[in-house]
Length: 65
Image (cartoon, one colour):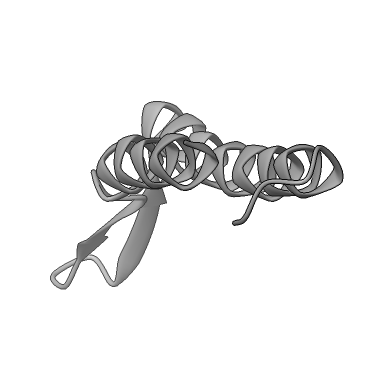
């Protein structure tokens, strides 16, 4: 069961973090970071950390990850 929960968390966080972080303007030569996009990237990082924590909990309870 733990593996299925981890895979669902991976999918959700990868989908959220895949929304983009920066926009490049080739004419102006600038890269603009959007606050919403940075929040999405942080969501991906937090999700990755949560899957690691979940795997440790499931493994400590004797399950397989």
